[in-house]
Image 1 (spheres, rainbow, N blue to C red):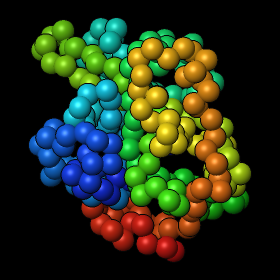
Image 2 (image 1 turned 90 degrees about the horizontal axis):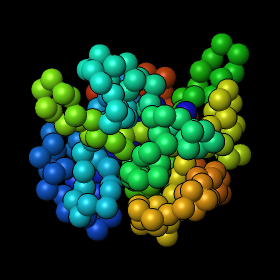
Image 3 (image 1 turned 135 degrees about the vertical axis):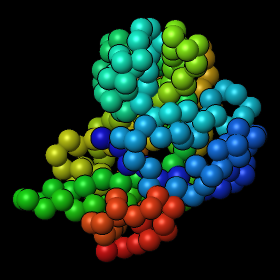
Length: 232
């Protein structure tokens, strides 16, 4: 699955990559700037791309619009960090967002573990020719009825692993659904059919990706520490 991401690009560079304004991201610059490791289990704020002309900042962990209480919201977001492509059209939390609320989750790389007996070997995985690439995502907005506060949240879509990521993620055999640059704006179009959406959720070409082993202690480092990406 994809629970550990990297977003080490500055706000202006990220906005330029997608042809968006960076105003909102710059408000959160102290939180978002050069995050070499972003842990989904902290439900962090993270930059996402929608049809808006500005880069958006949502929390990781999708809360469906129909959730009634804050307690229910806290519980469900723990189960919606990722959404499987093969069941996304059926799951109650995802079936409306996948049709109406698709987004791009920018990434500079992500982390996964290979299991060898009792050992877990961490890898950093990235695209060879795309310093910033696009993971397919969905989002939703939940309004807390007690406070009136809006919460915009997202989930990363996962698909079957390709040969490279299958070797690394050798227990679940999954990888994030990565969009090619030419499919990015298509993914955001509101009028795509279910078949068109499904056709974009496929394993990325392994020849265009690479990975290397990193140190086991990378999760203990401050998220802004460039040493997180150091080879083991």
